[in-house]
Length: 84
Image: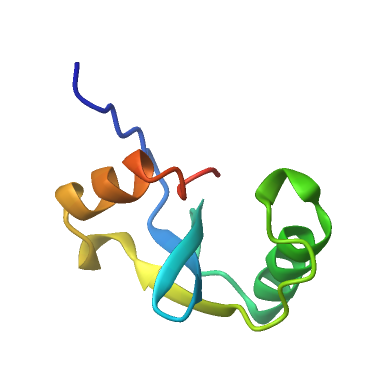
């Protein structure tokens, strides 16, 4: 069975990376603000469920969903990084 990607009205991804490795992806309906980035960063480095407690050198990048192919999104989901 293939993956079902239900992005709906989500049009932006906030991608958390370290050393060119994608660690987490969160989808947003509107372009994430600096406050959104700060909030996600804080959650990622303090909430044990993400496995990133104490990681301080995360790079957060905003990516319009249309800039990623469905195959790329599916790959990220398979790797377990698309959790929002």
